[in-house]
Length: 211
Image (tube, one colour):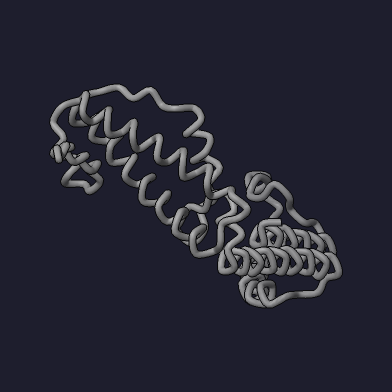
């Protein structure tokens, strides 16, 4: 019986060292093209509604590994072999649609994995709570009530008033023409001076709260 000896197909270089050892541009471009085909094929499969969670996780993990490998090929081709890459528009769109969650890209139905759905639900609740607290802070400010943040600022604002009150009182009694431009607004009565301080304090508080 005659046996046909087939040459064993060479496995694609995939580690940083293996990719760096590819010395010719043609070979590097060939391996990159096979990788692109693998990524596109695997990407289409993560949308399969019949995939179980384990296989879905496996395929998504493989896509993440291949995306990192693709970046290594691109760097090697452009920086070491001085080649030019014609980026595949379909591939760019597929990778762009991946969602970065907890440091990993999730494609297609992989975003429906239980641990990912749980994480996204927690993030949504956290975002809702933050927005609610911001709304409460604004309402409290409008009603002249103070939240914890404002309570921290009050001593600083009080110190601000204590510093400027005697200065304004002195300026109020200055009669010389040369001193008219010391402040743009110079209170001419105690009542006006108090009003000025209240407005200045309100403005300072709004600036501190970024409102």
